Image 1 (cartoon, rainbow, N blue to C red):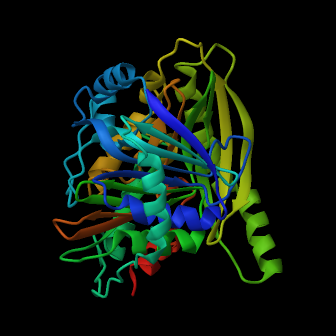
Image 2 (image 1 turned 180 degrees about the horizontal axis):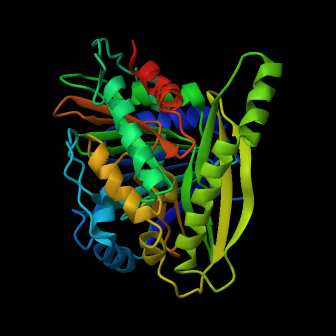
Length: 430
């Protein structure tokens, strides 16, 4: 049983920053921050889970079955991540590309300490609490504002895993697959990385988050491995018997000129290539959701709607389905994973071609981080716009990608990748 207390916050922004600093003492951290974005699907403004009571970590083999067993037996809040390479358990696929990070394929933990923040209130839930532990921790959290975030002064030299000429060559091969009819669309990604490099993860996350203030920002620490994410994209959410997926396809830069910025957003909303990209993925998501949906319940709530973030405009669609109350939560994720926006159409063919043309094992990039509730609800993001860090190996990585379709121009795709990479590069610069 969890001990639960609610507290009114004087200043939720200050509390959130203090809470993240306080959390760094633990080996297992999941921090989720909506940056005050609110929509009809929002549950919390921010969530922190720390201090593992129980854990599951595994490679891809039978990963979803193991997760289902863990989630059922725990019957509690669990937080963690799914790497892209879990595709190898749902289909006959492989991941043989270079991996400089070495995250386990799946990791979840049952937190001893949980903070749920909404509307200047924090609900605190502790498992196996000792006397006055919540009050003592709240005092420590308040004192965290005196902690200084150590600045990282190590210069970081970013390298490209795929250079420009090689990118053009690979994008051209992808187009040849499309022209042959092997696929209609695929998300092609490239890695930027730094070796023998040291960063302060909280400082880096704060810088990255401040650049774009996205609705699905997250900070993850698992032993010596970190993820700092400024993701704008929800992968999938379950609330009761309603399932929501919100794929993003279509990106345009912002402008300081209001007139030009409005035009860029309008142009994106009308762009036939971007719309066709988005609609193809919407069809894929509809098909994925139909595997667990009540017949006839899959519907598109929003199609190709443009949302504006600090750095970019994004085209987002919302697909919804209904499931029977007894449908297992993990089965819903298994039948839709990996998310359509990071794979392609048809999904399995696209994933095979992606594996052959990309140079890096995706791992946590284009996977997902999130949580299950004791009632079997869940909420997961898409891990994009993210910096990954193995502290022991001193290896830093961030990847970006874009959808290649029949109408793609390799030069424009390359330029879009650089726009997406800009925030991560800025966050790593001193």
